Every structure is written in C-alpha cells, then in structure tokens.
Image (cartoon, rainbow, N blue to C red):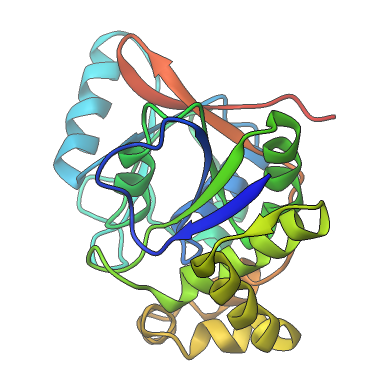
Length: 243
C-alpha cells in the first residue's frame, strides 16, 4: 500500500485510491461528532445556498433534517447550527439526518465522488478511518481541504497523523505524504498549539472557538467513520457499523 497526500482537492476523483478527506478545523471533526451521536445520513453540499435548497427539498419529501455549517467560520442565517464540534457535542439534535455546508470541507468531499472509497477523516477518528482504509487494501490519497483551494497547514498536520497510522501498518509514502509526516512528527507533542499557530487556527481562536481546537487535536476520541455514497442521486455519508 502507498499513501500520498494532496494539499488541495483533486481536479478529478482518483479512480484507484481510497480517499481520506481532511478538514480538521472543523468540518470532518464535526462529522465524527455527528456520527458518534447517531447520525444516520449526512448530505455534504458545495455551498450554503445548496445546503438550504437541499434541506427544503428533503423537508418537502417528508424528511426531518438538521442543517449545519459555516460561512466565515460562523453559522449562516437559516441554519440550525454552526460548525463547532464542541457545541454539537452538547446540542440537542432535532434529527439523525443532516445536511452540511462548509467553505472547504464539504466541497473537498464532493471533489472525490467517484473514487472507490471516500471517507471524511480527522485527528479525532484517525485510527477508525485508517483501519477501514487498510482493510480496503487500495492505495490511499489523503485529501486536504486546504484554504481557498490551496495549502492549509492545519490539514497537512492532520494528514501527517493519518500517514503515521498508515506507515505503522506498512504503507510506503510519496513525497507529499513524507512531508506531511515530518510536519506532524515535529508538532505531535502539542498538536493543539500547532493548530493554533496555523492561518486557519488563528481565525478559529479569534472567533472564540479555542475549545474546538483542543477537541480537534485529540487523537482517537471517537471510534466512528462514514463512507460517501449516493441516495436518490445525492451524495450522502452513512456510518459504517462499529467493529
């Protein structure tokens, strides 16, 4: 098995690689929280407007939906919740079916539609996600959501942790994966502080979400993972059964 890292979402979905999609601050960390709380279907959407429209479509079909996401790190108007994993961990959820729309994470997931296996991954469920990737026995591409379509240090650090798990299981590394691994190894003793120092981390702390940084930097808090498939032609995440 070989592991590579893409510092931004691919222009076309990889056809022979498992994709582990990372938006550690905070979309894929939020997904782990939702899965741990019993979410059965989560629909990722590319924009806030698409999220609102899909919520309305599902409600019109008779489905109760919980709409969450962010614009500029804060809850958009008309949404049930923002993109804070600590807030979601304590919030009463109105449905086990959710629609999520974020600036970077959900578009990154959608960019991978068509790959043989696509999973959101984060520090908080690193072992669960990499275990499934190992069992699938494909080469792995860790896809960083990044910032504004480019490099995001926080996602690369989280990618390095995933690479570390895969290398421990015997994977070989491509050059970007090796770089991510080395960045993670330099930061692993205080990953939360390393996240705080990134561009995305500075913004997250500035918005008052330092508790989210701490949670997002906690390895293996959740033993949950979801795979991306389709429902009525719509991309949807569904949980895998726990082992």
